Image (tube, rainbow, N blue to C red; front, side, top):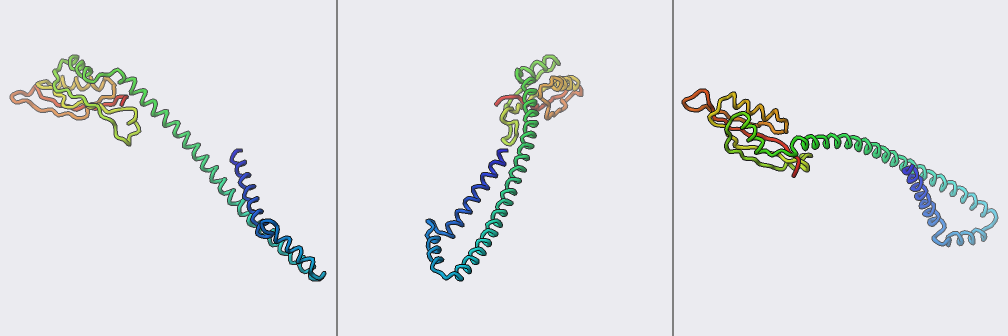
Amino acid sequence: MNELRQFLEQLRERLNQLLDQIRIRAFGANNERLDFLMDSFYKLEPKERVGVLAGVAGGIGFVIIVAFGIYFSQVNRLKAELNDAFAALHELQELKADYSIEDARFQRVIEQVQKKTGDLQVKPFFEKIARDTLVQIEGLNVQKNPLDADNPLGSKMQEVKVKDLRINNTSIPKVLNFLIEIEKANNYIRVQDIEIRGRFGTRLYFDTKLTARGYMVGG
């Protein structure tokens, strides 16, 4: 309804402007042309007055036709603008609905990560798993980095990276058990890269180096 009211107000304003322009051009700003024409008309002979009246009637008819043509062209243009405005409004409403859905999903992701990692301390977490799986870890280096600027999660979350973690002189079953416990914890930390090297003089024990990556809520 507001759009229709605005459309009618615009139409009324443009019509009034058009009529004012026609009146000023025809009669002058203070009707001085009209006064001059009336004086000249009364000085004419009766036959000449009839001819003038006929010409004036024809001119008025022509002006009316032109005015209606301009009027309807303006109406059609305003209708087209109004249709475009309604289409844009409809598209905006659809985008708003889509945004609400995606924003709800975004908030759920943030809440899930917060629930899993809100109390997580990365270094004690790895040290506990090492104790539980009976392995010795060395060189545990924890880094927290902001996400890329174009990442929509960047304003809410950060990347956690565990680098240079080493498990030396340990059997493959124990290393695998250590890795499985990291994944089972379900706190959004995953092993990203692993390197296993054999030790000279033994086929049962190996040196392992790994990198893990995860996410936490916070800046």
